[in-house]
Image 1 (cartoon, one colour):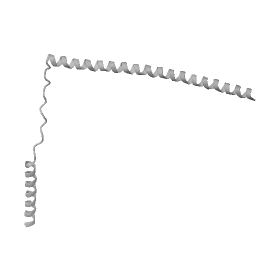
Image 2: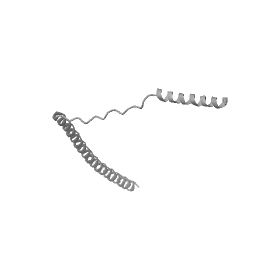
Image 3: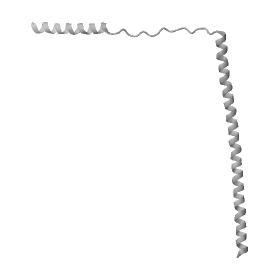
Image 4: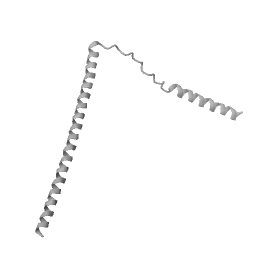
Length: 106
């Protein structure tokens, strides 16, 4: 009967250790209390609406700058194309002149 008594003591000691460890651990953290939204004063509401209006004005300003930039880019492309046409025409005239000069010289 001695081995049976020893096994019971071992199990009791193990169970006691587990219970003691469970009691010694920290309790689970409780979530912070949920705060109810506070009513806003009229001044705070006015300030927030002014800030929102500033965002709208900034957006409009940004949109105008984008449109202006797109127009400048479009005009720039037209100028580049016009410049390339002038270069091509000038090169053609120079080539024809050189060919005519070479024809007279021979």
